[in-house]
Figure 1 (cartoon, rainbow over the protein chains, first blue to last red):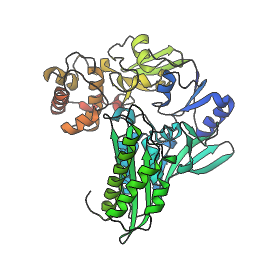
Figure 2 (figure 1 turned 90 degrees about the horizontal axis):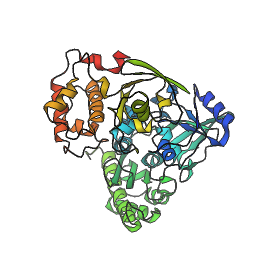
Figure 3 (figure 1 turned 180 degrees about the vertical axis):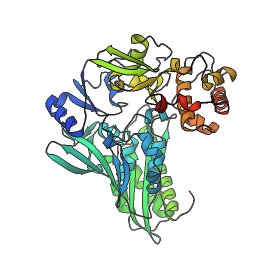
Figure 4 (figure 1 turned 45 degrees about the horizontal axis):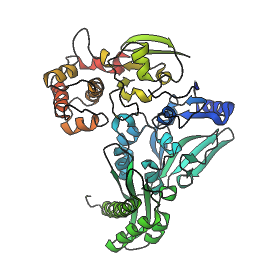
Length: 291
Length: 165
């Protein structure tokens, strides 16, 4: 039987309450949202917080809405909420494609957007999709609010720039019309972590790629994106040559490790192919072609 | 700490350790052993119960997190001695063999039908894709849930948590 080590439990009534509880209990306190990453680690003894602060009552953090040219997603929105949100799919289809392959429907009923990002598992898919989209994270502490680019949120495996008494409250995704996007994942079995994932979002000016985002999950890409490849692709023609260039770039840029999900060279090759396919689909969608 | 919640329409209050998982609370504190305890890693889905109308894996929810909420287990599917159509469907269509996955499957099926009364086989397969069955190959489970969809209880709305809570 897997039982977590003993801890104290408190339920936050508001964001300010959660921050006050974090300040009161110091570095050994942890927020718990859906709990589907943290509780398994606690059951294995890999995480041993002394105080758990349950933020599931913060229902004001569950909203998903368009506000001008920003898609705003509350940190407590469940994965299932993101997947069922029509406005999310209309703006960026890759978010629905990523959500559809995150865990399974019952887990998605509990797991949250903010929890996934803050847990910062290196194989987590949402960071790659939101990284490609250049999302921003709204972080609140007792001193006020700050906005952190998603590409700067994670500092390493299971580590973020959040201070011990800060809470992620919202993810903001800039909306730029005319985007085409796609997300692809290879997993060993349904609901598993990725062997490799790639997501691409693209905007075209005629036949030229005016802007592009490429996200990679589970293959050690810094900040879950292929930044150098984006720079290489931006401004080029949206053709097969560019798509191949992107694949080669992503494969070269990622840093996969050999583990039970496969050898590093296989993951590198897979990353290249998934990047090619995601970019090809994103370009086709950008052109309004069915893909 | 003390928790209070509604389980199968009954209010319950217990003194618990914060680290107690909902699956063990239901089985060991309340004696509701219909909810099974399987992989303990939120993979297999035999521990699925409904919390505020939403299927959740109770091995990965603290009992403390269910404080103040409404929980339904397989024991709470029947109404006034009448089996839920999902339960009847699993009997009629041989939706189980060993029965280990069955309680979780039926809870998820009930929630699916409350949300979507006439799901396609593909939608059913998607809904139960977080739950493992090693006996049936899933085919009969899909048939069982389709049977329930085509034989709704006359006042089917009464089974939804939104109405009963």
